[in-house]
Image (cartoon, rainbow, N blue to C red; front, side):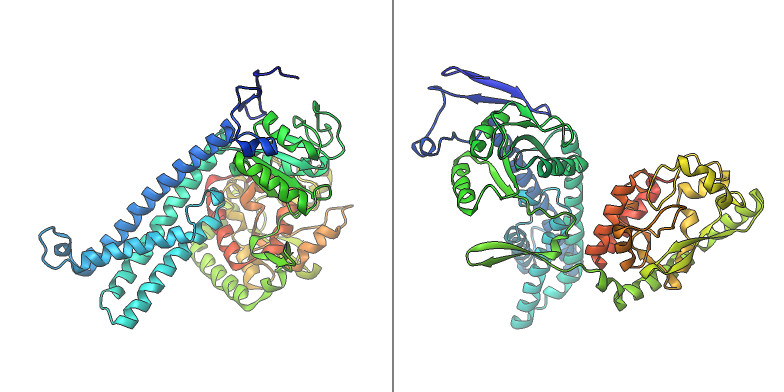
Length: 521
């Protein structure tokens, strides 16, 4: 479509965002803008800047309220209500509280705990809050040691945990609000992707798979493409218009009202062209990101190395060897023992229900493949009729998972009591005995079994580098509702990136998934 001088061109992106591009004498350009051929920030960029400013301001207010509340609580507990009274002659405690609050808020700002770049990024948001808070109180502790103050210890005991819990709670609530808004079409980032069609399609799939991250590809510049007006092939991804090649990035930004340019492959843009592109994007307010072309790599394994003036991305080795360390084994043993003791009444009730409702044993041992390909018997409470394994061959055609897994939503072999036990994952509790036997871990890839005619491929073998787990990434990401390929990918991601921190996060999410009964059947 062509436009005459002074004409306003409008359009609608896939997410429903309306864009306007004005050309001709009516557009406002600075001298520098004329030099590079771009206008100032678009309406969509200005909208992003406005909601980000509101986000930062609201978060600052919330942080201030939490920090002030924490130090006042510490002052009240340390010195009593009299220290807070307006008529108190000794104001040293109040002055101390004000100084701590100012130092704390300054530390949060210094660690960029309210940066819009980490909005909705989860662990990174929480990490900066914790680091800023700990830095504050380490500074206070050193000052107390050097100047022999007698106030700090009481404050540390109360203000630190109260403040950190409050700040993390605020981040959690804000994150849920932003994620909910992004799923509903707000606070979204309109992305112009530059690269080959396959790479753009994969990036678009990941964005659609995680709508709470708020990224959406609204246009593409494909090297070697002809004039604008085409779309990505249906075999790659539908609905993304091709707006030219890598030389038409600035025009494409106007055409699709993008506020971010994502380069997915730099084979057609060298370092000098990318540097020039950053200069051209500067007056527009459009962000520039470069995808390194790697997937499912934890941030802890990535490091930027400045070598010869070039920022090189170093990817650390997979962490699966660390998963066998003493720390993880000790955690597994203590957690499994505590879980079995806590669940003992539930196990006794379930055993009675199983015995009264159907004939057969209480426990069921399923042959699975463990660490290094060694088979073991995974314990479960029996939820099926006796001799259910003999009926498996007749049900293989109804398998809803594929791969080395077998699941059907209405399995005729499951008893009424068994269906209830599966709904709340009670049948999985005996697997903590497998953990005590060191056959399984609390967190790890789901143990596989070999179906008739199925062979382990390279991906499945890679999962055998760590112990299988009672829970894992795929269980907290959809459980039985996930496709086999997605479940395999999540398990492989865990194998390469596992850590004690990720284990604790997965355990917490597992508890929530069990109570929400998502994907359990």
